[in-house]
Length: 319
Image 1 (cartoon, helix red, strand yellow):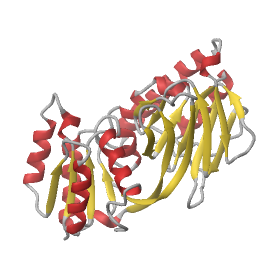
Image 2 (image 1 turned 60 degrees about the horizontal axis):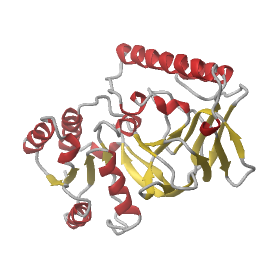
Image 3 (image 1 turned 180 degrees about the horizontal axis):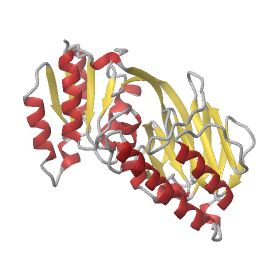
């Protein structure tokens, strides 16, 4: 059994006793190198120490800001210097969509950590490791560039609970809860689609340098992961260095057809007007409304244009 590194951010859990519970779980374990991040610059020091300690995995335990900054240090600053160390993303509110996509079955951080450390003690932590490229966003207001795994825009992001809501253990209750959330999503989406579209809500999409399309969309999704939200599989096969692309026009017919696919749990088999599912290597979007990346809201800078490309693969631990 090797050493496992845990990178945590106490500020992600301010206002609760969750960080104390996390520390308690860690203190009960062994073979753990824990580093608590207070400032952005601390991440560089932590990653350097992790590599020097020859850790076998890095667990990210904090909100979207910690995850994004860690991705940035690994990709742009090459802090691991080519070391092939897999990452585990645990739930922490606004990155629950990523944790759930990677197989987490609970939204309480310290409980998810406890299960992960049990696997580490048994020596099977790395039995399920999958490689995904990150998506790189350029043109983000106040930031410039961001890294993530799950981009979403359109009417669907009005329901933020889809991206950071509670994660339930798999079973009948979880399926019922997912169906209920999907029905609520589609009902609200259908009602909005019945109204008049605003010019400010239009999105211009240019994927793989094909002709640009301008329209109003219920959902525009770009991800290198294999699922949408609430356990719905994308179903589409994609190439090694490509991302899934899904767009659904903001019309009642397209929204209802999308709902039927989501309720069956698999988004494959698209055959309705107003929907595109494809694989892409890059895309350029122009929009005046906020968009979602891994559970957090952002806006495009001045021109409203964002450019999405793919980076090299990182390895992620699946639960």
